[in-house]
Length: 301
Ligand SMILES: N[C@@H](CCC[C@H](N)C(=O)O)C(=O)O
Image 1 (tube, helix red, strand yellow):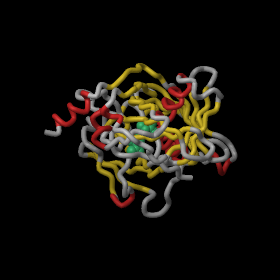
Image 2 (cartoon, helix red, strand yellow):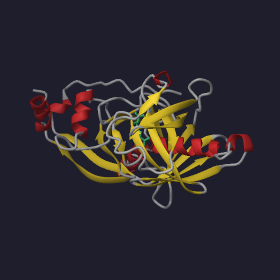
Image 3 (cartoon, rainbow, N blue to C red):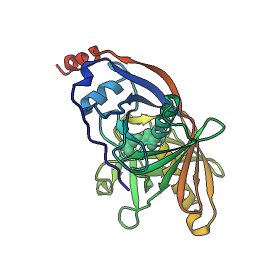
């Protein structure tokens, strides 16, 4: 199921006024949260890029606009934007932070919270230990020409697995996480036709049985400290590599996935759906001064 963003009913230009925001992260994948229950904010790509700028703005890997859904089983829609202002279908760390914000604001009273996203409905469960679990749906592993791709970075190439978690991923297994180098530029991915809208790239290594570690270069955000959908893609690629197919075997498989910013747990259940468990932290709350947007005009020349 795909859910479109609710239409804006904006009547005034809110960016000219002081704008409430929060800052949060999930395993150090960090986000600016913009509460916009009435859907009045129209954010351009340049607005988002400025908010995410770590010097001229607030600094973040992405923006989570919290808006009421138009219809359907979820009251809330996660409008996720990458740091460069591009729109993405889903964010596994972001949806936990989104849910944590709603709970803190008193807007999520139950332990299970359905959230509408562009990739469809995701249900977040608040665990007794403080972590949050997201029902991420099933991974899609394209067969045929797009199944295997090649990833290139730092003058080296690796075969990679194409995995779709609602958003696109290329998962490459490496012997050492230093192999792809500084990852200042997006890794090359071939054939390019496998990803008409670009892709996230995960470099994954083994830490032990059922235990992975990864680095990620995110589409639209660069290298980040974590990627929830990327951890799920890595887990599913590793499970297939390890000869595990929970839906075929009727038995769940669980992997620990270490990311530079912490630890995630990913399970592929016997019904073929994937769950992602990890922390979500709200760090700060404040008001954006309208002067920020003047800075943007200044920077734009
Ligand atoms: N960090 C996210 C993924 C965010 C979207 C991604 N950059 C894309 O463009 O698909 C996660 O935790 O899943």
